Length: 159
Image 1 (cartoon, rainbow, N blue to C red):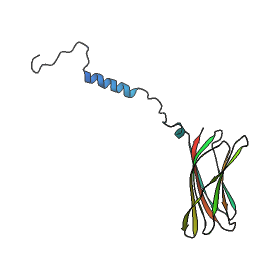
Image 2 (image 1 turned 45 degrees about the vertical axis):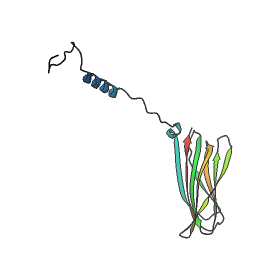
Image 3 (image 1 turned 120 degrees about the horizontal axis):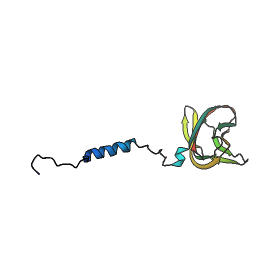
Image 4 (image 1 turned 30 degrees about the horizontal axis):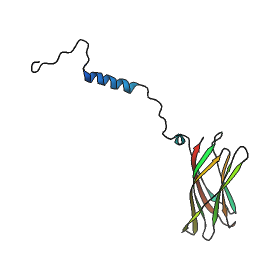
């Protein structure tokens, strides 16, 4: 071939760079399959939290709303309870099934110190509990004369 001459193409041949571009465009235009989560549980994640001012009483209940018609798998509970210094508190989780079975789970509240005259207790507990009906928490205190505060968060997934 002479210098500066271009190779001859056969009739109807398409240069390689144009073929590659057409293939790339066709691939980009093709319908993409629906993305599947890598973790099935993440697709059905459940997270709910409540906080409340505790009225003077020995027991205070916080109710949660599990998804209707599904079983909830509870994997983690975290809570903060504040009561006047010198008082103590306990935390219990109640679960229930439409069949009538119930579960009671005592969660460990750990004292964190006293801030602004209030004793602060926290719990972060990994659990494996199930419910398809009722989910509630009871904050039990040793003094029915004073107010307090509680914040509870539940995470898991629905099946």
